[in-house]
Length: 107
Length: 125
Image (tube, rainbow over all chains, first blue to last red; front, side, top):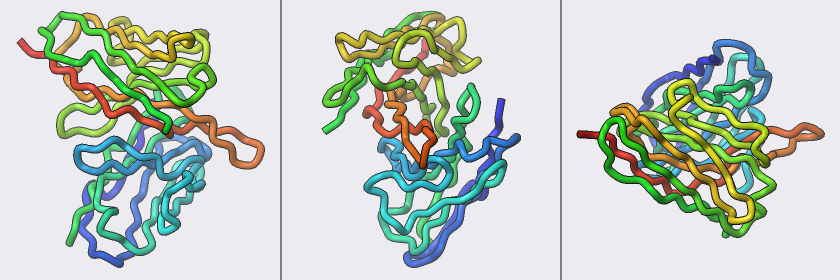
């Protein structure tokens, strides 16, 4: 199985900060990675697919990059509504696997 | 608005069975693969099962293989997950999610672009 390891596991940041979350795959997954945002008590929301493509309706302050085994999700200027848990997810191979999540908290 | 609505969750004893359903509306259900994803209390997301547009492609996580069975009825726009031999560790919110074909250039990529609100399964004696 492909292991997806996110870092950090948690992060405190202030409104307006630039935030970067990383995800490392245990083997190459090309660009078959998506990113989700999940707010407490809510359903996961697709942010990014194909490593760097922004899902329709997602604000442009979100961006992502990477290929192979190393990937990043960046929020250029943190907004109050961005405080949530973020998950990376590989769709390269069955079983599809998620990272353990990165909890983004208010500083 | 495109919608998925799960039902069938509840409290069940270890070793028991439960059948979850997911009703799809306002999109062409038969054209999309579907996933079940679960989330244990306070934990992260775990992929459970995938079913393709037909039933030729069905996959399970190792943790549920042989115990869970996914099925779909395209005529009724519905997805099911039959869960047998339930264990304490199956306790979770279960989500159904649409697997969209998202195109970048000439390539298609999977992405879970629509999710249901989830149904809670509690396995406890």
